[in-house]
Length: 292
Ligand code: GLU
Image (cartoon, rainbow, N blue to C red; front, side, top):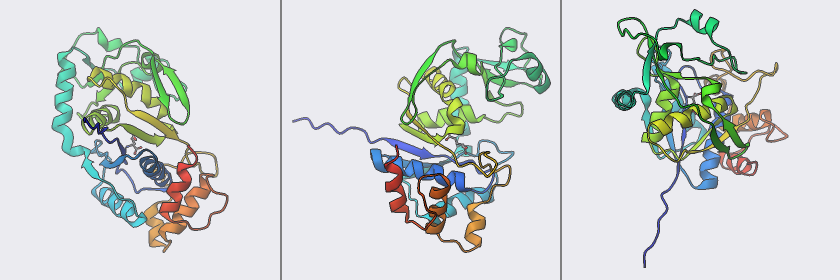
């Protein structure tokens, strides 16, 4: 008798070490680990330090410490800055297929010459695609994506039909100073690390169609499954952000709060629980499994 063992799925938690983790990251982590519980997935912890200008070693260290303090465990881990050879190889594959071109436009030109989408991002109209090429000038590298509607399903929000060509146009995969962009690095790693389920905040939802398009160009035929969760907003209705110095988990720990108290506060702020009283991680994950 042939016994069929389906391949176990894998999700990931992928913070960028450009600041300390805050309540928004904790909510994301809760959704990731709850999804793992619900769909029997392994969890991969990926440190997304592709932006070497902004990543800091003390923030990398704090990610591991804060997650362990909260009680999260994971089956595998990686650090993006150790993948630069992998990124270079994928770039060369795309170059061989003539899907990459240098873009010499300055920030000012980009703003002046291109329309913007509803998120305020430019929709690149392809000026440098046909232009003269001189690699000695400062340039970023853009990927030439097809003009095509991507139909994808969010496990919470339903079906989306989006054409990244109209949403953002050809986008950068390496910046002017030679750093790999988030869009490129995340696609390469999600492929290479065998990620089957991507669980992340709604603020990144508009990146999904372009990432599926790029992954297709890199040969991944079946995209991962996606779930974008609601965000915690501050008192003025804006999402929490590291850059604006959101209150960090580190500060809470130093102030003597327990993991259970912090979890209780986050679930309350996210509107998942009506009271801010302490709760165990295990119970918090069960609760989140019920809402999607
Ligand atoms: N590194 C991103 C962040 O910290 C998350 C990327 C993703 O989940 O695709 O916001």
